[in-house]
Length: 311
Ligand code: MEV
Image (cartoon, rainbow, N blue to C red; front, side):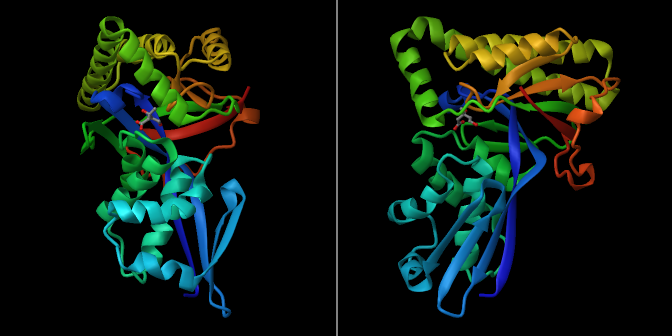
């Protein structure tokens, strides 16, 4: 087997998290932060994987992987057999999950090449194992990179969008995507006449954001368009709080950044996790908080740079 490396980009959801699980539009971008995986075969017949970002190391006898070889298409029985492997990524990022499944694909295919559709399908199965009822947006953006619109399983890459800069903040509050997704479902079931319009409104936020980004790319970005993007972030953040996926740490992020004239929202599952803050072209970040991240390696057309800040 020798030694191989695979990696997958992290992602941020601009708009549409949670609503996307219920068939609404989401806009997602890949980031220039990646999860790396090293695969190594040993002379004693073991296969080892190492995910340095999440400090995970696992080794299996090659013979134990052989049953997987019989089903390479990602069917339901394969999901059961992958359960042990997906366990590696439990509690980790979606991109970690992606990388484990990419490894499995590479191993089983004898490194024959890159088939992104198959990798995406496998990653989706991993998502199902980890959080039960995923929309598929996370594995799609981690597989294809760039900025994309995701709607009911349909992936539309957005090629003409302006370069945006965001501040990515990790609240370091742990949360379970599975519990948050099922909590939103319970709320919709309990208050359909209240929650369905909220989901419709989030859908309209995503569509308005997409339209604004397309206009910005065509006619050049204006201050008014940045105002619109900021207002959309505020509206969506409130909707997400109504869905029950806010957290005091995310409220702190919104309050602190607003004190500096910047607008933020949670990104992804919420309940802690990460938040994003839109930076305007003139905004600079404090050098102490700017471990800037290989902008040259950005695959995304949408995000040119992001910085990290811990609350
Ligand atoms: C998590 O990154 C995004 C959610 O919408 C879940 C999903 O789409 O599967 C909360």
